[in-house]
Amino acid sequence: MAVLVLKFGGTSVANPERIQQAAKKVKAEIDLGHKVVVVVSAMSGVTNQLVDYVRSITPSYDPSEYDVVVASGEQVTSGLMALALQQLDVKARSYQGWQLPFYSTDKHEKARIDEIDANVLNDCFAQGITPVVPGFQGVTRPTKEDRGRITTLGRGGSDTSAVALAAALKADRCDIYTDVNGIYTSDPRLVQKARKINRIAYEEMLELASLGSKVLQTRSVELAMNYKVPVQVLSTFDPALGSDLPGTFLVDEDIMMEKQMVTGLAHSRDEARITLTNVADKPGMLARIFGPLADANINVDMIVQAASDDGKTVDVTFTIPRSDIVKTTEALTANKADLGYNELQTSTDVVKISVVGVGMRSHAGVGQMMFKALAEKGINIQVVSTSEIKISVLIDESYTELALRTLHTVYGLDAA
Ligand code: ASP
Ligand code: MG
Image (cartoon, rainbow, N blue to C red; front, side, top):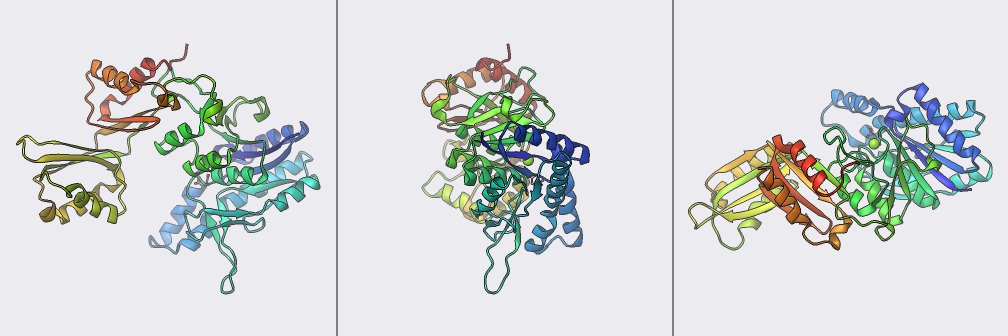
């Protein structure tokens, strides 16, 4: 008998029929003798709709009222899920974030979890009750002046709710039911030979999540890694049950059996490249360039500095999120006199391709394989950045698929 947290994402609870389907999976786990906590997202599309409602009243809204509105999608599905379970003769009831309570910081829209009182849930187990908890929502601690306010954990935050509950309960497994049947070696829409990964190290998943694989919220992976929560990602449409272990498991690096060089590839189109030409080659220039960007809260990712054509100055190239391009050019233009560059060039026709694998710690030459393979296809690499378990290159966006397929083959990831 195990303690399980079962989390159902937006597509898994998209309508009453889907909720009834999901309830059957919950019931099947209970029938196997497991103690289950259910965590639900809002019906897919609903949170976007709620955000639009808020913005249509005012674009400069009060974030605490925003949270009241957008947290409501999960309230609806938690009640519906409890009802669907009751129809299957499961003793179920919902607990909203404030009822548990699920304490968070007061940073509305992106609150962080502070502390969860799991006692209520343990009491439920003792009484044979299956609790249903809305993901995404928290509550601030009441103070003398204030009775506490509803918060939300950032978009995609119900993954984090589920993992946090699993950590608090020391659950045996946290199953995340979603619309894909696991984590893939690359995006299957672009790489036909992509394969489902059976086991992935937390740290690899963290890289993939922050590189834009939208399957899990990045914070949920951080939390899973810190508390060593056994998380499984699996499909809600697959008839297999979580306990059949059909999905992708997040595991500790040490228990990865076959340490290949590369576990998966990621790509991100959310990149823009900026080049400042003819910057003076003297100490302190990079600090002067990136200072104003940091002040404007712009996340600079890859950076390269190279000699300019004149041989006396340097060109500084870096990447930023595409949505920050206006802010970035404004900040750099405003400081042009101080920075003394010649031209400011921007490009959005770029993609960042990354190879990720804990195997890189023990294998040399991973980068070289990548550079050679891309060169053979005539793909020019504009910028490179590396971490211990990741190598990223910035290339022309039109080569996205060619680069992914080539690297997928080179690193031996192709499905047989
Ligand atoms: N409903 C929220 C969102 O769409 C939270 C979640 O589904 O994880 O962002
Ligand atoms: Mg999600």
